[in-house]
Length: 287
Image (cartoon, rainbow, N blue to C red):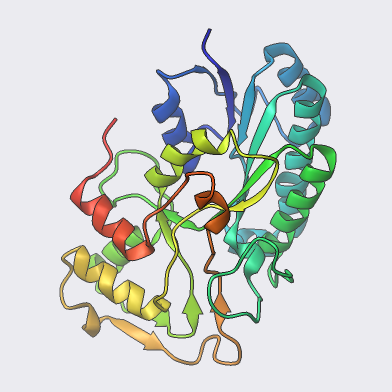
C-alpha cells in the first residue's frame, strides 16, 4: 500500500513542484483552499480525520514578506494559527507533520557566518516573527513534527510551472527591461534551487522532531552573488546594471546564511548557492 501524503498549498511555488515529484510515488492528497481552509480549525480537523494521511507536508503560507508587513493580522492568522491547526489535526490522527519555516527567523541576528538552529533569534520583520512563533507552537502541540527553515528559492525563468519573484527571474526581468539592480554589499543569504528542496523533502519525513536549516549555504554578499549569477545566466555585462549598495545594512550586516550540519548528519545535503545555480542551468530538473 502506498504512503498517503497530504500537501497543503499544493498550487503554490513549492507545493505544485512537490506534487509533481510525488504523484507516482504515493497516494497524494491535494486539497484546494475551498476543501481545506487552514484558517478554520473545524474544517482542518474534519478533513484530516476523514482522509487520514500518513504524512502531512504543510506548504501553505503567506510568504511575501512585504505583504505580511502590511497585513500582520492576516499573516498571523495564516502563518501561525494555520500551522498550529494543522499540527493539532496531525496529533489527533497520528500523521507525521513536516512544515515549512524560513531563514527570515534569522533576520536581525548580530552574528556572523552560518547560523545554527540553536542560535538566539530576534526577527525584525513580521514574517520572521510569525514563522518563529509557528515553529514554537507547532512543536509544543506536536513534538515529533519537523520544521524546515528554507532559504529564498528559485526555479529557472523559463519554467512552465508557477514562478515566484526569485533571484533568477528578477535578474532576467531587470536585464530585459533595462533597469538597474541595487544589491547590498552588507547582506548575506543563501538561495536554493527549489528542486533540491523537493528532492530532499521525502528524506525530511524521516527526521526526528525538531527544527532544521534546510537549504544552500553561501559565503558571498548579495552584490557578489548577483553578479556571478547574472554571468552564469549569460546576461550582458552585469557590472553595468547591477550596482553595489553599500549603505543598506551598513550599521549591521544582514545575515541569513544557515549552517546545515544537522541535516547533513542525516544524509541530507544541498549545493552551495552558486554551485546550485550552475547545477540548475547545466541539468534542468525534468520529471
